[in-house]
Image (cartoon, helix red, strand yellow):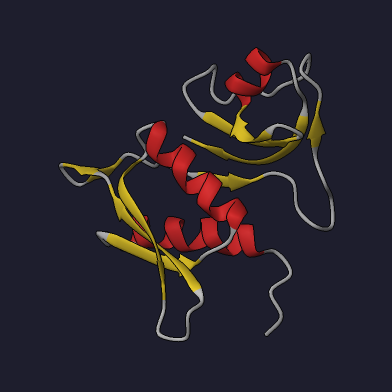
Length: 132
């Protein structure tokens, strides 16, 4: 099967692991996914992560999910921009996710960062996903 949207697949794997009460998610790695993973960690949505290689030498990402008493730190992950319909946002229109309780991940010319960071850096970009 050809993967048209690896980021959506990545988010779905995490979402499914949360629903299935798993402790660890393993996904294929890429630069964008590594950047998203790093943000998830910095924002406190996951416990830990490790970038590794599988037996064939392909990059993989292992993520330890964060649980407190049966509830996960991640309530939902939402893909915003997709290959069929890209969603861009200027600094002025940077989305606030649930009044600032959630996080938007944006791909900018200065790298992948949260919506709040993008506003601070004064750059717009492609809104990859929301997390809350």
